[in-house]
Amino acid sequence: MKENFFSFILTLIILVIIGGLGYIAYYYFYVGDESIVSEIVATDENLNETIKPIEPIKQSTDDAQVLPLDTNNESTNVQTTTGKYKYYYNQLDDNAKKIYSKLEDNIENIKTGTATLDFGDEFNSVLNEEQGQTKLNISYQSALDAFSLDYPEVYYIDVTNMVLMIYSRTNLFGTTYTTTIEPVAGTDYLIDEYSNKSEVDSALAKLESIKSSVVEQTSADDTYTKIKKIHDLLIDHMEYDDTLNRPNTRNIYGALVEKSVVCEGYADAFKYLMDAVGIPCVEVVGTGTNSAGETEAHAWNYVQINGAWYAVDVTWDDPTIIGNGIVPKSTYSRYFLRGSKNFNDTHFPNGQVSEGGKIFTYPELSTEDYN
Image (cartoon, rainbow, N blue to C red):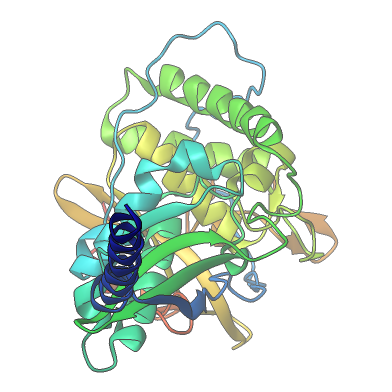
């Protein structure tokens, strides 16, 4: 009886030792230690303040109808998802496209400002390459740049508070990397004007109402008339923000609801409404030089009509103070549907949205203006 008891204890000890050794082997061979490798923080893509032209402006004789902006239009049932022209997405590398698509698929979730977007080991291969982290960093910044230009309606995100976290787990077979996009520790990635998803949704409802109104009022128009009406609507209802420091001065909420922005707000609003009516449009960044020879960062748009691309600069078409008077806000169109011959002497696209991202290319403009 005694011998059986000792045999049982000995067997138990051996099993415990084997189990412990098995766990240790499993941990070191298959699991390994997990650690944070890197936190990649994006660069804010906002441009610097922008100048307006100080040259005399003559009033156009074109009396195109100016559409009313209505932020309380609850009666229309017009479908406003006519088209999303994702020009910049197509220029991304495969890794950047995955990041862009993850943002796109989680637009509803990122309204919270705290959602974590999990990529698992999707970028493991590139991170195991030489300079892999550097490559992924460029892809991440490029994806955010492209997404912000293609989706001006997702203006409520502060990308400097979004971080691409890289985690590693190393065992005897090597290192496996996993990644997430999440808020910087202790904060969220909503801009300061919003503290929760409810506030974001309330702001977006006002923008959707405006968009629906524009779609409804231009539904019977041809492409040229749609473009012209929207161009004139923005000029009629918006002011250039000379203070340069209003909270929403660079986004579509500042443009369409608060009605005072700098060039980014003008260009974003034009892109947003062109998407709504199904007309291909891109936002362009670079520099502009006015009649006084002053050159600073600037943003404008290219729009496609009848298969060709033309430039539109709504900011510089918005009348400015001249002498002791103000040019009436009507349909001034010096920078409307221009070809490269009459546009590129004052506008210089560079494709550099932010430091650290890729340099984008733009559609080739028609040489001549649209007639």
